[in-house]
Length: 193
Length: 93
Image (cartoon, rainbow over the protein chains, first blue to last red):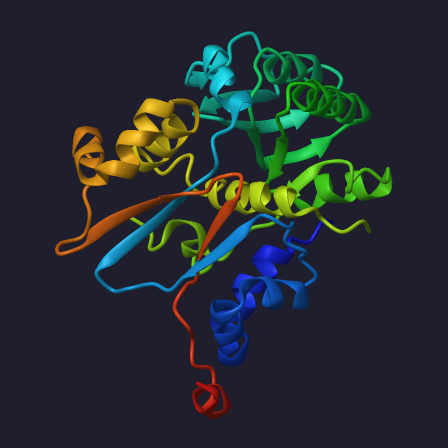
């Protein structure tokens, strides 16, 4: 599992006042404590929340993501998926529900390799992933990587996580760990309801 | 385990945060759209209130919104509020 040192630093700054002070005063030195080396030429600016103002931080301009707009997946269910699995797009998130096995894996692979741009594959309701399913995920991972994009796997169930661990592929995929809603403001200021 | 590069960590921070937002309705769709629409992004940075209004996203009463943009040379980090866990934490302030 890949641990994100930036996330670790933000989480620590929520409870460790001394570290928080160092992070604000000298972000690069404090991030180094968490194992994050900030490249030369990059400035880190740390903002503290304010009760009346929301802060949203947007990612840097990314040509690959802009081009990906040309191939935005249409929102809603993906058609032609065999029984046992349903796939549905919402913005850049593809939600899979059911089993990813030899019957359904080709449809998943096709859905994930038709487009490019970062994709979040939500596996919260997938409890079975066969070797054909793993092959489909690897193909999608490579397709997106070839287009300067990333396949993020989110909300893995224990059976799916165990399968990826067993075949030694947990580190090959970008698996996102659930983030506490409390920590989310690290990117968005306060959540907007 | 290889250390995560700075730019990977920044990308992942965004990805982790967005993973809870795609189904967040109007805001999720707005944040998705600014990722691939540079003109919308520029307007969102310059006049966030107007873009929110267009999209029907409402802020809590009395709140203002400020939008920051990371660049190749500047990373903005926003800290959640400090939680006082115990007296030691308080004393350390």
